[in-house]
Length: 166
Image: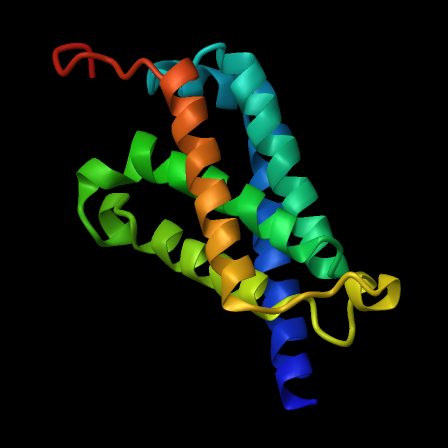
């Protein structure tokens, strides 16, 4: 029971973070056009498509986590978004988020891996449907799928600006 409460709290908090982040990318100041302009400047092509996918995927991840629906798949998608953010924005800035570093995305990747490992818990749609699973194999699988998805997307769609362009 205590673990179910902990998983619920973690799902809701991380889900809300993803919804807020996705909403800000799509509908915040500057909207999708502003996000597309930023994505263009960091080398993500086609920028408008990348901005839309990022925004809507983050919102979908958040909703799925809060509901406890297909938690390992939602975690894998969130991991993919965070690995992409790590590679395109945060990695060169060091560890601390105060310098746009990667500590934030690293914590979210670890948290999503743990959620995929634990499953949605007793208070989840997955539990109601009988699809709730929990194992380290599922967690490591979600981590791997998220990382591979990010690497594939980056290989096809990321053309980082040359140092003299940045």
